[in-house]
Amino acid sequence: METFLEKIKDRISVNFELDRSSIDVERKRVDVQIKKEQIPSILRYLKENMNFRHLMHASVVDWLEEGKFEVLFMLWTPKEKIRVFVRTKLDRDNPVMENLDMIWPQLNTYEREFKEMYGIEFTGLVAPEEFILEDWEGPPPMRRDFDTEAYAKDVFSERIGREDAQDVRETIAKRSGEVIPDFAKKHSR
Amino acid sequence: MDYGIYQDKLTRIVTDIARSHSLWILAYGTGCGAIEVPATMTSRYDAERLGVRGAATPRQADVLMITGYLTVKTLKRVIRVYEQMQDPKYVIGFGSCAVNGGMYWDSYNTIKQLDLYLPVDVYISGCMPRPEAVLEGFAKLQEQIRAGEARGATKYKDNLDYYRGNQKKIIKNWDFPDYNW
Image (tube, one colour):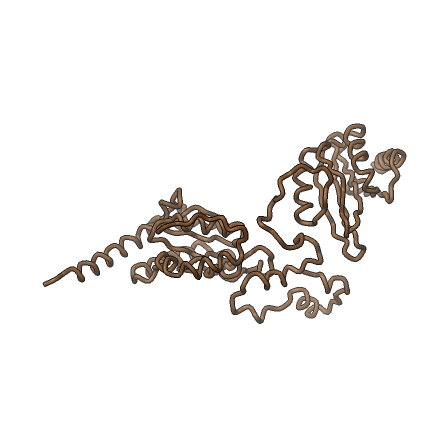
């Protein structure tokens, strides 16, 4: 299996300029990172030439400390039953990507979600403005710097009787003597 | 001698008793709490022996159950549904999310105080409330109806400005029709 995964990784890296690549034998997974300009071509290549026909999932990770959004596409092949993860990093201040729903039509739904929840723009995306949120005027709510607690306190009135509620993360850390790292303190919610 | 006043009172007592034994719930599951309703309805707990059963449309229903968390988006539909229901109508807040936001206390999209937007007669606490708790909630509602205290619809009509004001505060792009009660 290891040689087979290596072979797939080599075949991808011969054709594309990868930022980073690794394999995970236990999970039968090849993991590659690539510039965002090459995403349409690598996805098309994997689908049409290497039989990774099935798009399992697409998701976004918010790397707030780096100032990046990581967009992740998970592909699967039904014949060899292995996965390829294709990652790309976008600038957090100006997250723009090319529309990809001509490769897999279901990407249209994912892109609408990313646009609404993270504010990632897809050039050429044809879709209605709203996806899940209705009449939303605040910032994209899944971004880590969006303070949901402050927003909720500002917009909704709270019922009296929850004032003694403790911060879950801090209480558990204090009880077990755990040290919370700095990055987790600020944006743990 | 004029018996009109006694007749009115007698009629009210009788209709209240009759109403309390015929509560038709609107099958509108707003959150995860709706999963407890089938268990309450079916053979083990058999809510129908109390006269509690499901109704198909808002116009045929008496009880609106807010089962679980209520987002702003759903609140818009719930208000629309509540206003279509005919008097007498009752609201039951179901589960800790309906009581005070529950585990969604810091969510950007969940309301924390249901009674600002709709007149609630009974709250059932728990996450989730067991069918026993649900039945107890219904028993409480029946008591209130028999005592003539459950007048949510009248309260809503009389204090419409208060409820409308609260609703409009969080629902943007207000596009509701004006009802004439």
